[in-house]
Length: 167
Image (cartoon, rainbow, N blue to C red; front, side):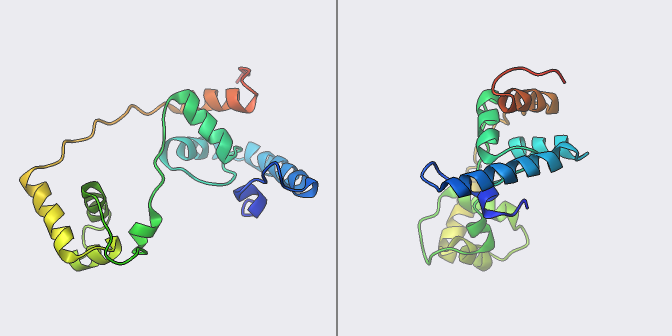
């Protein structure tokens, strides 16, 4: 049920009545399953704060999770799975942060393998790593993450149409 295409990509307004009705039924059924799950709270927290997951997760749609993040004043970057998996076009421009991110994600890979993953030349990877050794990037200041209670309260507001509901 959770892998149904209508839960992954909800139908647009121009979709047929039958597709929209089926999406509503699937969403209600999935919400019922999630409501009784003992892992709902940590699942919701992870889906809102840690990773941008598509589809129906922890009793919420992708649009509802975006609304929760908006109310919390936060965002979650999408992971570039193609780059991490090594699926890229040949010899393209890569930025410094991308080289460092892929290196951090794959510390035991050879520089040749990293270049292949990034779709750039070996000399490009070496140049960025030398630059980082010479002039290390400024550390990023971590943004304070919301607490699990803040995420749960905000989710109740969003799912309740903006009305605060009792816990």
